[in-house]
Length: 116
Image (cartoon, rainbow, N blue to C red):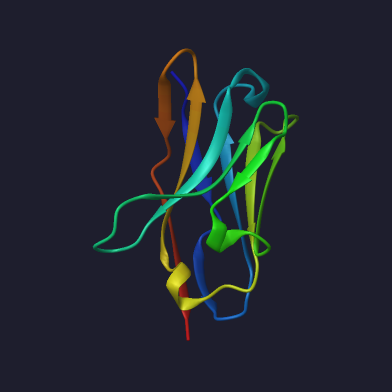
């Protein structure tokens, strides 16, 4: 069982930056991929970015150029650097890990609020 703990959310003004962290209970090199998703009130959960164990990254179009996902295998942690934040980026951000054949693990979520 993989456990994930997110941190780093908070309140920031539009144009500001935040860095989210997701600490995994296992070596992230053993995971097929990790990623970040977000869910705003009244909306479905949506993909933000993913990174494979090989370091291949993927971003939702609206985050390209503003967000960067990265991993630190020594700390078993994946990060999401968010720059040029907009009010519409306000959401609960969830960390996800894919492992095994079809297993998924989710963190508890961290709130990001961007004020205008």
